[in-house]
Image: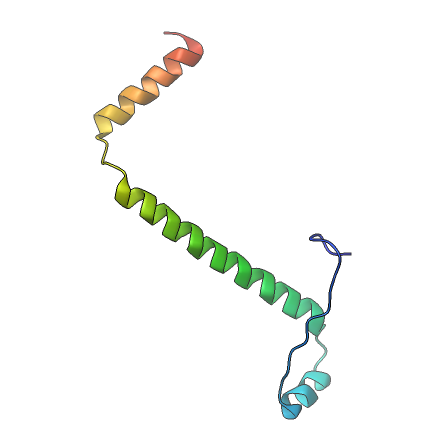
Length: 82
């Protein structure tokens, strides 16, 4: 059983010559393809998240370092006192 849940079949068409070469090597093709698909999904989701962050950054105003330091100090003081 997969971490993500029940496994389903997905078909892939490859040229006959490639299929013959796949049979000659000792590779668990199902496992290999699951891992490759998972890696590609992570890559694409990371790209999507990066684009969203870039969009947010482009709309957000710049904040000076002094203001950030002030906010951090205020937050710390509100949690732990002076």
